[in-house]
View 1 (cartoon, rainbow, N blue to C red):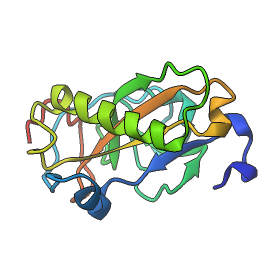
View 2: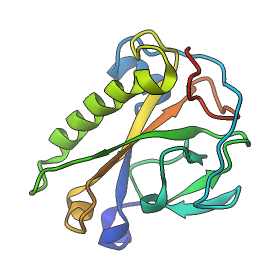
View 3: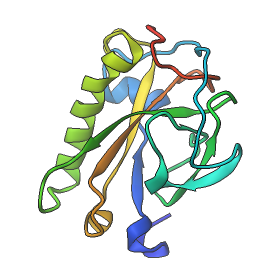
Length: 167
C-alpha cells in the first residue's frame, strides 16, 4: 500500500531482509528451527490486524506477505505459529528526517547490535534473519521516530518466542 492510499500518520515500511534477501544483503544469515515459549500479544487478538504504531517489543506477527508501506499487520499470540517477533525498538533522535538511506543504515546497525542480546548468539553466526519497520518521510512528519526490529526463521513460522534461542 502506498502513502497516497492511506493517511499520512499510518504509514510505515517493512524492509524485506527476510528469506533470500537476508542472505544476499547481510552476510552470515542462514536458516534454523523455531524455539518454544510464548509471550502474549496485547495489541490484537489471535488472527486480528493491528495498527503498526501499536506493535510493541514481544509482539508476534504474521507479516511474511507484507510488502512496502503498511498501516496494519496480522498480529497473533506468540504461543501460536507466527512469521516474526518484535525484539527491539530504537528511537531516532534526529530533528529533521535524515533521509531513507540514513534511516535504513541506523535500522541495520541498531537491529544488528540488539540481535545478540535477544537471541544469545552473534548475528553473523545465527541462522535467524531480521527485518524492521521504520519511519518514512510522511510518518516522520507525524512524529514517528521508531525503528522496530523483527526476528524470524527464514525456514518458516515459529511457535513461542525466539528470545534466548542461541541459534
